[in-house]
Image (cartoon, rainbow, N blue to C red; front, side, top):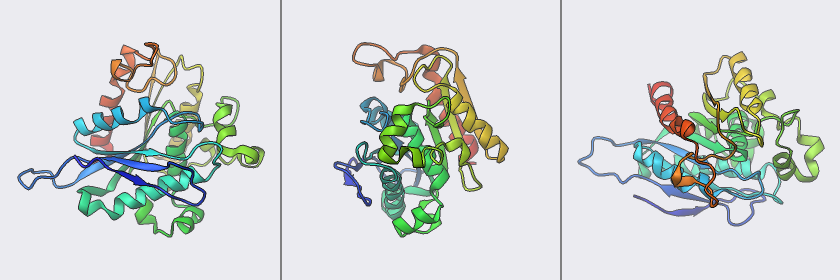
Length: 272
């Protein structure tokens, strides 16, 4: 395994923004020469980064046969659009090293949980914008994502908003930017396919966030798969003992199937 840390710097980046790789080793006697890669954006309300939604995800994706990388992006008080540009910088870096790292450059998937889901979905909406292309000095092909995996994501700044996430992201520009960052209104022809899951009992980021994005993507004719589990609160991560909270919470047997379902979605939607 190539397990390294690379600094990620975009205009305005805070310390320590970095990309940690979990790359499956290549061997000449192995039939697989290139693998998809999942970039993981942990949650934390744009205030901190959850370790429960980082390395264990990467290792599980490795077990499914994918490369993975964890992006530790800048959070408050560093404002938008820094984290978005950091994610774009990470995608660009991986594509630049695709041959060396044996990555399929057209199969880079962006995963995010909670506020990290908002970052991943923001990238899905804005990666091809002139603003991002100009800031990163990159072509559309260098920044194009293959798909999004959104775990109980923050999406809307409207009635069902997780307001703390938007205030942390936008700071003093909250009133100016909150409508733009309500991502159900930003779906466009360049938005990639998505796998989304949430729970009916989530009291922090209501399931309506996922439903609003799903409906918006359907209207645009973009492939989207949604799983809403009956039980379970917010921030479940893998929903089992491997990522349980320090107080023993966040174990929910019903929700433990989500990564298996996401793997099937990757195989059937993104790799065929």
